[in-house]
Length: 262
Image (cartoon, rainbow, N blue to C red; front, side, top):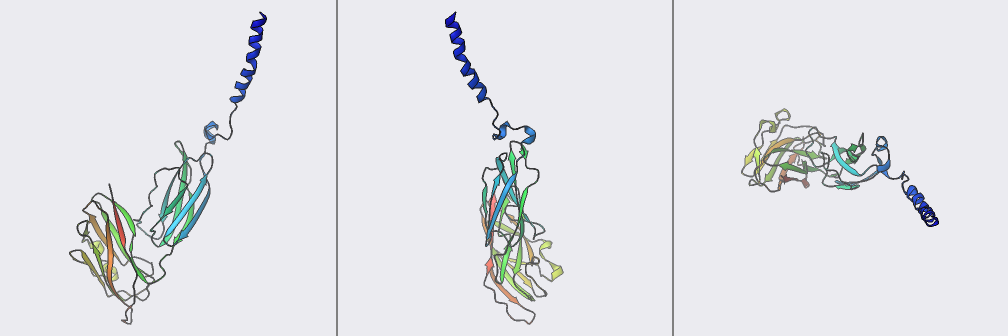
């Protein structure tokens, strides 16, 4: 009998230790009540350098995955990169390159399991990388799927008193095809319909007077993707005149890159 009592007493310390190990860890997000598991972004830091913007953020202990997007405020029909929500990832740093001129809102949201942050965390910023007179195609980069049609827009940047222009663009006709569509003529501003010659488009306009400093596009161009390779649309030549019929000197062209995705 004494031997049996001794054995029981020797087990008691082990039982007490086991009870202590079952204590709830308040810092463990998975041990919190489901109603308290609310993911959130607690800090967002942004930096803009030319046409590149970087963002890094920190989530609370319930934030495990993140998704982000851009809201482009300067364009009625945004067609550039990053405008759709990204795939969920644990990354807390993103670098957005080749951004078009204009105002943006960066949005990021967090998630734990299937619970998403109620409202995205947002930060406003501006891209103003082009400071000299220039012609640019918007968007600088875009992704196109399959044989979808897509639009690009020609902008005059930091050019004032623009009374007339003749601008030539080129593209690879083995990869994309120009769509001669009535929406490309822009008759309200005096544009003549763009003229197509093989892989070259000539845009004539000698009846515009005003300020074309990022206020709106000079012309819209519609293309169809016919190949399965990336392509580029380039501004190759331009003659611009002011209301005194003097030449406007311009040496800076910003072209468009089209990325094909499946």
